[in-house]
Length: 235
Ligand code: G3P
Image 1 (tube, rainbow, N blue to C red):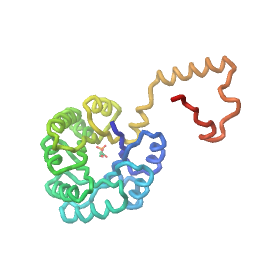
Image 2 (cartoon, rainbow, N blue to C red):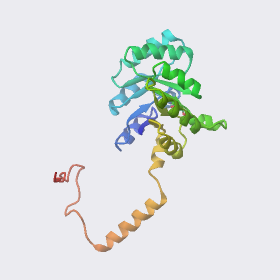
Image 3 (cartoon, rainbow, N blue to C red):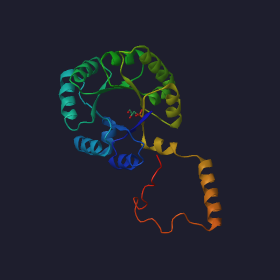
Image 4 (cartoon, helix red, strand yellow):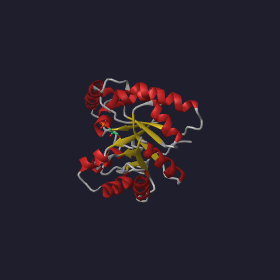
């Protein structure tokens, strides 16, 4: 499963990218507004930090302007993916951009019927919003299961399921069980995934027992990250 970060906060993205667990980034107009920064500047910075797919959403709602915006944004960096809303104009723009070689992430998907249309329009990714469906008492993860089943039935559907609007680690775990291709995680959800009280407790006990041995593994304290030379592994 690939992990994208769902944020336009450059410092958060830089920090999480350093874990080596980040495969891409998704943004949207609300996340850009939240950043308080210039959209193109933020997009350029994110594309330089994370080499994977970076979703940038058009602001227009008509096909001609979506195409102009999409072509402009795609020109900013090689790894830009254009996000369009799941509307008739959005899917028309998706088809044209896709045929021009620009990958498209079709967003604001809330039904399997919509997702079939996006796949037929050649979308690289579909973004079903599981959290927002749960928020209204619908079954967000049930939609993920439907999309994985439908897409895997038709080889001509090359669209990948990009689970969005994630609220907690269980959304990630359940979507992974279903075979979703990508999850786009708010930074807080990724950070929460690391945590378990038994891990903390176990590490504390290991360190306390190690201290009792009076031993150290290194004879000198480490200065920088590449201080210790890589071990020579026997073939
Ligand atoms: O990528 C879409 C995501 O940002 C929407 O999340 O929490 O606004 O439903 P949320």
